[in-house]
Image 1: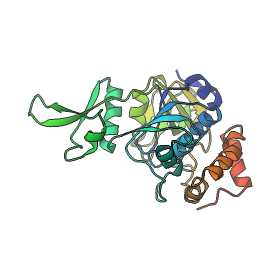
Image 2 (image 1 turned 90 degrees about the vertical axis):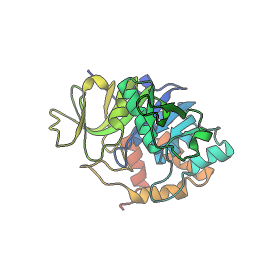
Image 3 (image 1 turned 90 degrees about the horizontal axis):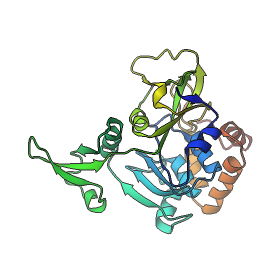
Image 4 (image 1 turned 45 degrees about the horizontal axis):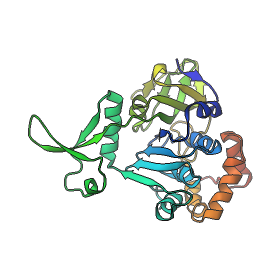
Amino acid sequence: MAEITSLREAITDLVHDGDVLAMEGFTHLIPFAAGHEVIRQRRKNLTLIRMTPDLIYDQMIGMGCASNLVFSWGGNPGVGSLHRFRDAIQSAWPAPLHIEEHSHADMAARYQAGASGLPFAVVRGYVGSDLPKFNPKIKSVTCPFTGETLAATPALNPDLTIIHAQKADFEGNVLIYGIIGIQKEAVLAAKKAIVTVEEIVENLEAPMNSCVLPHWTVTYVCEVPGGAHPSYAHGYYQRDNAFCKAWDTISRERDSFRAWMTRHVLSTADFSEFMRSLESEKVKIDA
């Protein structure tokens, strides 16, 4: 059975310097609170995995948590670039960042292979692409049934996967609904998993087409209301578009980025205090 604990205790126990860490969530349910706690605990030399790195990985990279990034697309959705991500690649600030780029379909297939206990994933998606020339982990295999040449990439098996979800019960079963990305596969592929949730309830009462992760797939469950902000949590709150726009200015220069992170993340004890700090300085503006 998954253990219910605080986010601080879960990160202290399961995130170590040099780990391979996946933090997934598609459009909504992005685990910002967990990323902030990793930053507070000053973890270093992490290999970060995410299909679509956005603001939380920009923050973690800019604060020196990462040495490697495995991904398929990166940006501030609807706004533009990730300036701290770009600075790490172009100027090695605050530390050099090695990148390993794949396609969306490939990343999903790699998680699926890891969750299934398979050594590699097989996709057609690189036909006509130059990406295999630059990524040595993209190999070719021949189908034993048709003779077709396909792309093969190694399975993803992170040391730890962290996701955010709507609910968990007191046994640690987790309920996810709305848009479900690759969270299920990312949890099943990992050696251990932390799930932050909006609330812990007696009964999950799963709606149609929802996903339930049984307690034996999760190591820790942490109740963190609002823990996906500024992304949205279906059924709880909307995406904070104004924050995403403001981040472009905040993160553009190193000094403004560092000052903001020190004030709102390093100087706050947890995510609830972080949210209060945003409200007190009117950083969070309703879209």
